[in-house]
Image 1 (cartoon, rainbow, N blue to C red):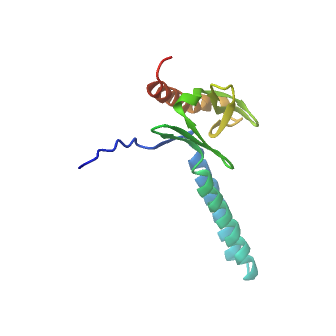
Image 2 (tube, rainbow, N blue to C red):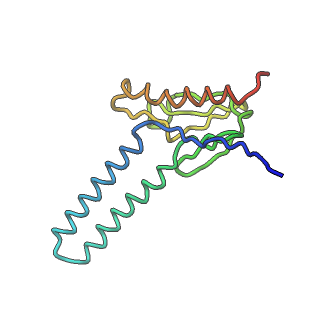
Image 3 (cartoon, helix red, strand yellow):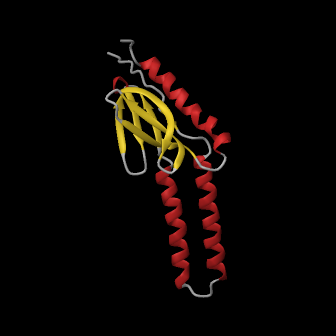
Length: 153
């Protein structure tokens, strides 16, 4: 007997460029640590430089998971310190609204009225007008996926 499994391609939605910015920052910090280690004559500073570079790259590995992971039965919202699984029937909509230090950030609005911010979809204070449409793209795509996966009442 053969079983056919329908597997939905997992997709992660986040602001474009956030991961690239993290890689650039990590590379710059690593380069500064490397220059400091090369110019330092004492070996005791090499460990500190290597530790700082490892910490920056390690934090980049953690932040690369941040975003909205779409699955067949719902989404998993992964923020820096918290993950939440939500079924399609719990979600009312996704939207871009102010959150914390960001002028705009993605939010999951639940049918219960709860609001869950999405750390992976944000617009920084600088270039807000230019970057807001880029952050709106994943929100629009998530709303389209939500409509496709929910039955009308």
